[in-house]
Image 1: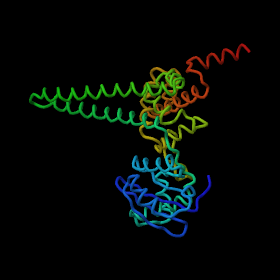
Image 2: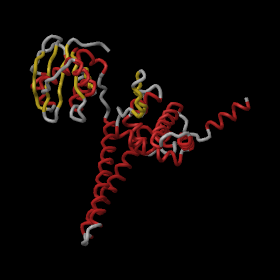
Image 3: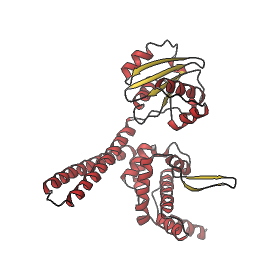
Image 4: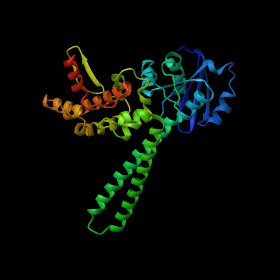
Length: 337
């Protein structure tokens, strides 16, 4: 990807956009509300640029607040957009020994970062399918959290010295509503997956321990692993790879997972690994072998999660469903050759 001579650095907040137009020498600062109409009228139409397609728009990832603008610029207008991890921009700031932190200085920093490194963070807008899957997964997660919260309230009421049956009934009715909504959303998820990725969904579902949530993540959020050439790239992206700290003879940090990936995906994988230990022969054997060799239980579960990723990657790339007897059949064929 080519580098750009001009960069628009945008510091995004919930209600405001702080914008720095940078040509490598000078910064011009603008402010607009965080909506498409205001940004277009107060910046795009106001600034004189011969060809916006030759300008890089550099944003910092801010949860969901940057998504509408990034998608509008990239998908609707066809401009080049980069969205960088906040940690990378912070490290860049630390290297520059920056002290001041305001909306204006942040937009300048983002613009300067974009001039040097923006070509590495090109934003690829997602299609509607991604957001349909993602929004349903988030809603299901939120509803489960509400159920857990209300269940805790019920448990607390049951320990009070006076009767609270009417309130408990109200809480349980609300819990039932959440459960019904979860079932509805799960049916919608399965319909979406079967409609778009029928064969891939069936391949993934053939693996014991892989449920609807993990299938939705792989097919919807991770796009069938199309952007990954090897399974270990997926493991690293999710944040399940070990983070080892060793240097010379004085630094010997204990290895643990990097935790740099998506927290939600890791949590779902962890839960699926617990299920796979019970129902997936290869995962169960791996778990028992690691425990017998003295490995910690949590480390063994993470290893099983890694194994699940490799199994999913394998069935998707080969186009063949999961076969628990695959190695035995392979050995038998080899002996007969």
